[in-house]
Length: 390
Image (tube, rainbow, N blue to C red; front, side, top):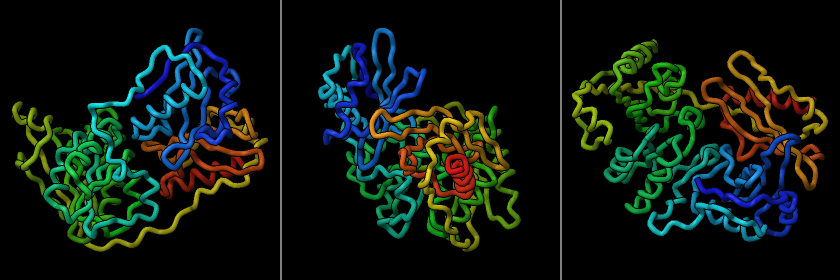
């Protein structure tokens, strides 16, 4: 990830950049913390640059929670900061890449694009955890009448596929760098042709982290049209037997199992497993009936925050049945009043990580964007509002 290593400098001088017409929006500090945050307009939203002060240097890099996929754009942003703040750069990896093709950014979709999705094609399919993207890109090339949504939580894999989209001239692939389980809850009912889950991480020691679960299967059946299918492929005997049990639980179900079925395209890992003569299991479940439409949920408004309550927030997680809220670091803006609250919340196995930006006038919003509109996140949001509004 691009970053700067500079000679020590007084970070308060960055306040002079705020409000000068550039992308710099605010600086936020926490008492006793060596890490500061610089709010920056980027790609139509607000991201944060983390400024970590050390005795011999200062490290400037994108914050993990708000970090976008556009690495080249981040490099340009850091170079601009170094120039405008007159920083003495000791080391940096922000030179523009001449060898790597640019990201096909038009096909890089954020979670906000799925609040009221407008798909360019009638047929839509989704792949969860596409890895190198071989299967995703192969499907898109052979089915130009279908929009393929690839969801991948590993950022370098998402960047790699965005480059391949541009190199291959594809127009029917969307890439989402997010948790597929949360994205699934935002999709309209009865809309997808297929959902592919190929070789997910088995998580034998942490089974609660597995993608396949009763809740995931239920959501998948909701978003699939009647006749659409969920396809799981795995080389793990444990995962296969676990998934077999999960697929068997619905009261009315149609699924089948295939062993060592050949596909026209395989990942490098599957090729390796085949050379090792490992068994490959394919479990396919078909949607049998139409599902009810997804109901309306909360709007995640944060207006009316009482700034006096922020300092009194308990740092211990607040746990309720099925969800939690955890307020951690709190920062004060150095100009204009207000502050930032780092916050984790939602379900225990797939929590949201956000910042809450608020003003002394009580205005507030989530950064980098609103949470995924799930029922669990709505319950957590109501608890957040109670904590901040009194």
